[in-house]
Image 1: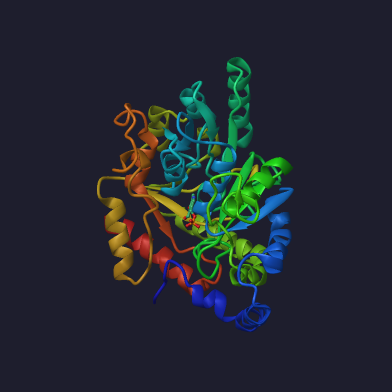
Image 2 (image 1 turned 45 degrees about the vertical axis):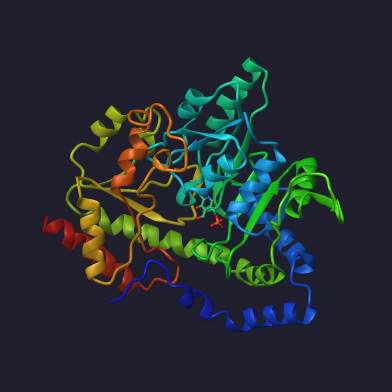
Length: 403
Ligand SMILES: Cc1ncc(COP(=O)(O)O)c(C=O)c1O
């Protein structure tokens, strides 16, 4: 039985009619960039972001470019980013001439930890980018607290930009992600929970001045035509993208609930594998490398955790396969049974050739380094059928039984 990592046809086919109508509407309007469709999308999506303002942009990467540019990030600035995330989180910082400063991640939730942020703050730090990786919120209270404390002592202003590309609709303590920082940024890349029909992204903020700056930056830094106040870019969203996304937005809660149901299925079924444990929230507090090793003991498989105070949207269901070469062996084993899986991410960002390697690369990021060798994301999309989920579980059980 085939179980692809993602099946967009299954999701989009049932929406053929409303999607076609939306397409037709834009075709007839002859307004293809921004305009009423984008404005309506920006208004419709606000409840999922909890923010006061939102701006439709051309991608999640461009959302980061707009947010960081609006905050004046540039040469001489340092921006703290997780060492374990998608490239764009840090590349946008570097593209603006600033320095991405990498911080290690929590081995339990895979996100930035306040302790690691505190360790990397300097007088040059102008922003911190917590990424809500795989759909689960980072520790926003903890991160805000260490930033606040440092800012007060050093008398500097440090902004938070939440990279919520993978987390539309996720909540931290009941509040949607994207509403905590100076800015939140989202992606509608087709594999995201709200997957578009091409590229698309969103910038959110509660600050009206920042919104106006971001608004300008989206269109070449210009408020009045051919007068450019700032060095912006063409970061505009297409009307067709907005119109189609508006259709899918009506199903987002259902998509998120479907993924959550699938995650529950995996969590309950995979637990019976010998040597399988689920990561526990309580390990987070003191997640040093030695404590992580002592807690996980001789586990062979570690399942992801959902923190009690978070509502994850399960953009990915990422397991950890312990032991040299075991993760890749499982990936190949699944592929032989026509089951898709993916490694997000095989290389921590401090190892990327185009990003400056930090001095402590060898010792400074034990969790990011370990995770990049152990992580494997399984199919979790909402349209998965029960027999497909059972097929995945059986394959994983067979793999561990034959080890
Ligand atoms: C964490 C994170 N940040 C930023 C991006 C960039 O988004 P986009 O692909 O829409 O440019 C992604 C996309 O995968 C992402 O996962």
